[in-house]
Length: 61
Image (cartoon, rainbow, N blue to C red; front, side):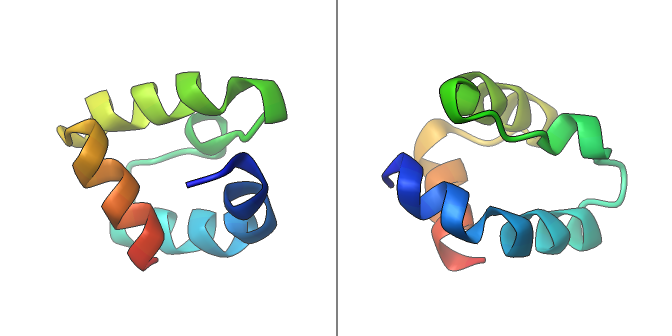
């Protein structure tokens, strides 16, 4: 998933993630154009997902 696709849909995805995983905070979902990989790594750890699972989950949101 390209950075542009992620950033274009991020506000929508962020709200869906927060509703599905209520323990996530805004700071956990802070999207910085240069820090996409770090944010995804943190989310994978918090949610117990593999990189592929995380990317598939975001593509489906």
